[in-house]
Length: 524
Image (tube, rainbow, N blue to C red; front, side):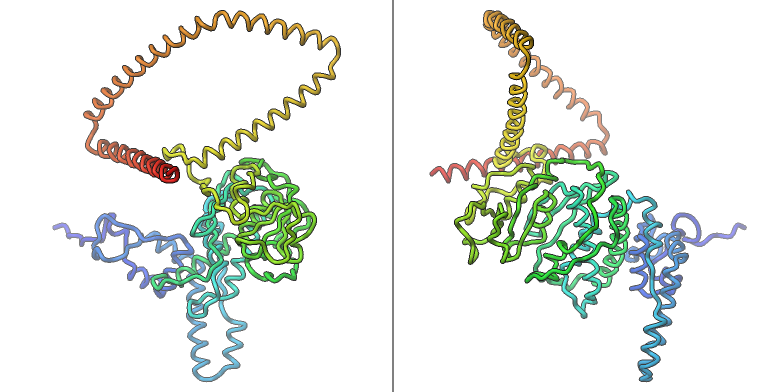
């Protein structure tokens, strides 16, 4: 008689174990297990059959075996033994031996081997940099809190690494987009190997810690992201020929030693190596030759980032407010600061002018962004207005400005070519006169044939309109026939696609209706 096998001993269900079983195998606490899973990139799985119960968390047996072979597990065991000895010495009031043990025998964990394990190539690390940069930008603005286990050394390191990354982005022309929102400032940079990184830099306000956030998990992610960005900064600096880590110059400033001015203290020995940058080259030098003074009520860090990325020189000290080389003053208050020289011909603008000009790639007129004026809408460069089905009026105005600026550049090139043509020899002048005569003859012939061509064009347009109408009707009939032949699964998928398209059209129609009502109300 064949022996009957118990359920869960063989097959796909035997490849999964619960979290309690994993903790028993690894001999780790729940906090250490969570930390190890975050660092190694191991996540829970969903087996088809949950033999231990539907309320349990399951892990694949290969993932647990993968964790057991990592050196961090043995380091965790050593840390547990160290903590046990240290607590015993402190309880016995043997403070001297306890301090000696803490100073010389405390285990240290090294995460450098995880970088090569999780990112075999450098471009793989760059493509996974969005959450890393956004998290460190958040950590750089957190206050040190002993209760929340946020150490000042961690905040200082996060700020230093984030500033080094920003320094590379703005001095190599990698910044492409910026947008100010209620959450903070969104940035996008085009890094080497085609990697696009988008992150959020929060406003510099005192944060509130929600009670449901586990700070142990957050600190573990912060530790991992600091290790990753340190490696990425080293590689990026080496590629452009800079020494890493860079030096920081001392500053005598009323805003020194803060996140606003720490970026300006970074110094390098030489200019970066020229590298191919994918994107719009006009944004790299849009503010070149301009000198900006930033008032103290303006958020200095994001404005400084955008201005320096555009090639401008930035000043923010009060004693530099009336320097003769300043061309623009960025002020975000209804009146000028005390001691401001109003007789100078400098342009006083609000911070939105800097962001809009950088996104459009041209210097916008400063009249709309003057002191105390109601600002125009600040459009997001991350939204495709044509794809969404609604193009705001401000987008049309900005597009017209960009096209007119391009037309001026073409006109200047045409004037230069005309000036060169006037200096040509007499032989070339004769050829130009002959060409003009032939053009006049051709123009007369075109004038005679114009009426006939207009009639033919109108008839052709009517015929094309009728053909397009019949083709649309046939396409609609064909679409209905194809829908009737679809399977149930594909029919549901098609209905969801059509529903999404209809929702976008409905949203665009609502925005258009709101715009009409606002215009009518303003007209009254």
